[in-house]
Picture 1 (cartoon, rainbow, N blue to C red):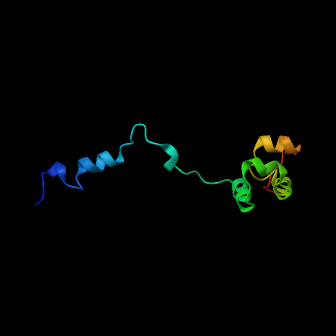
Picture 2: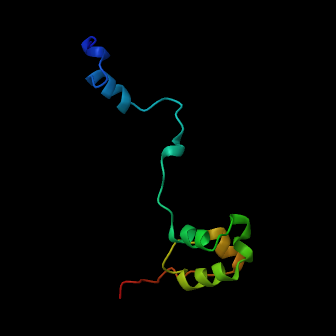
Picture 3: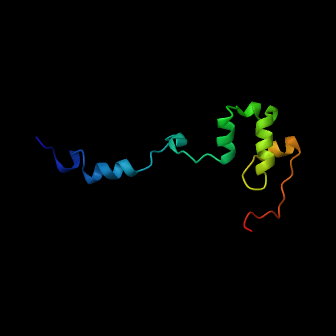
Length: 90
């Protein structure tokens, strides 16, 4: 037996409630895209505490310092400078 209009599983009221953001809901379900740096660190199977000791990651950062995002703290730790006037569009 079908219930009242507001009680059906696909009623407009239920659909509107489903679209409402839940107060206090965790934002952990929102996923951001990983940066190239994060993908490289993941490929090298590095935890953030291992970044500074990785020769492979440092070489990657030196090659890509002017093109891709690299955390500033890591650039400072290694003394890698970025060319602020660098432009890949040539």
